[in-house]
Amino acid sequence: MEILTSYNLIIAASVILILSFFFGELSRKTNIPSVLMLIILGIVLKFGLDAVGGAESINFFPILELLGIVGLIMIVLEAALELELKREKSIPIAKAFGIAFIGLMLSIWVAALILHEFIPDMSMEAAWLYATPLSILSSAIIIPSVSGLSDTKKEFHIYESTFSDILGIMVFYFLTGQMDAAEHSSGIIGFGGNVILTVILSLIASYLIVLVFQKIKTHTKLFLLIAVLLLLYAIGKKMHLSSLIIILVFGLLIANMPLFFQGRLRKWLHLEKAKHIYEGLHVITMETAFVVRTFFFVIFGITISLASLASMNVAMISGLIILSIYIIRFVILRIFVGKDIVPQLFIAPRGLITILLFYAIPQNARVAGFEAGILLFIIIVTSLIMTAAMIYDKQRTSRAVRKALDSPVGYERWKAPSIEVLAEKAEK
Image (tube, rainbow, N blue to C red):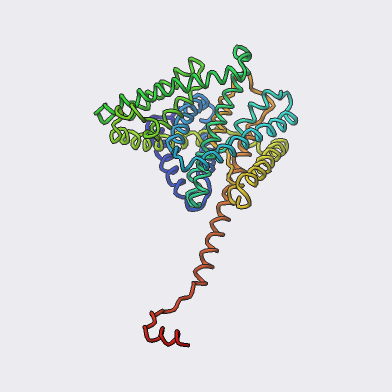
């Protein structure tokens, strides 16, 4: 087709990336998630392609699948590189992990009950699988959005959303494994053994990667490292291992090298050289994740059907799931955190991981009655609720600051009394 020439595609890709950058800057100032802007951009592009008759001739799903795999790896790696395993942070990390795990499992359970009840031909097994992506917090949306919060709240959201991503992905692939008749008999014990084996192999591979790459002197080693990680992930998938654990373990190891290289291992580590690898990898991971997220959400916007949002059934099911998300979150936060749960209560958006895992549902597990509009509805509404909560919190903080400035603490000049004055007071 004439419109899909090489130069037109380069122009389109460049404009999308430039717009994505400005969406990010606008998101920081307005607290409107850039994800929503990218999806809207995709919808606008869809109208443009429909006008010239080009949308039907393009199969976007293989592109989404490839972007999804790379995006999943980059998100987990980026999250792992952000986790600092320090003794003084053990309590905040444990609390965030507990909240993420309990919230995830309860949300999956309630969402599965709703889907099983209201969607025809939805078995309970399939309902759990479909409910998992809908129950995972989006670190891709949360982490950039909470920069204006206090350090304690910001740290909590970074840990919670990261754990929710990783645990949710593991639960999803456990459930898909159970739907495969060949793996069905292995159950939780078999899955646990698979995870332990993967962790052991991941640790060995991670130590070897760090020891080898710290000795490489060429400046092009970082993309070589990314290639090695992608290779390990793909091989792990072929061997039916929990491949994302490989990425997670490597990210944790290189982000916390002093913790992992102790005793005799310390003499093998050149910390300064290894730190350069970590810093470069951190930058490349963030840049790659930015590019992947941009194109993924734009293409998702192109592929969605807006007509499904007009369905009353979609609105009802989505509304019930959204209501359950905030009720469960309210109870858990009151138990673990206390009364100060604003805006944390409303920071529970769904996003990239939700879409990625939805497209990763095996063909034999797909239910025809499930409408993709449910996915889009939940993503949009939870993002808008988070936006409103962040704007409210910013206004509340501004009011408190203005009040403090309007009522400054008074002061007066003070002069140390002389010895004579003190003597007179003593006589009285």
